[in-house]
Image 1 (cartoon, rainbow, N blue to C red):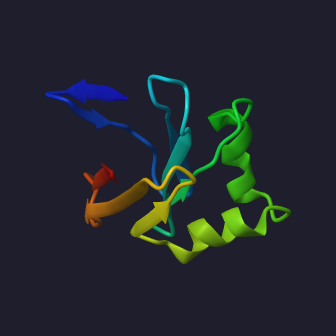
Image 2 (image 1 turned 45 degrees about the horizontal axis):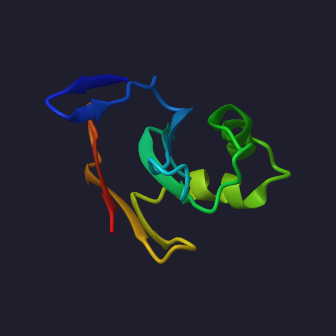
Length: 112
């Protein structure tokens, strides 16, 4: 991940790869993940809210590729390019690919 002028830029490989960004407030509350990836050469995104403190990116990422976790598997195969979730604290977590074609994708994340 690189940071340039306040814009974080994750770098992932080609089709069949993904990455998770974990967010948490300074008070250590409201943890959530934004998972992004490429499947069949098209981008996808997923938002997971309501995380327990012991849930990590490393433990969660394999769930997308394990048929036991059908919700996660469906998320990447559906190839959503946007998603909006209302978390338990009534904040809306919205993500949307602004650029969803080519090699330099852009994803907007809005926490409201």
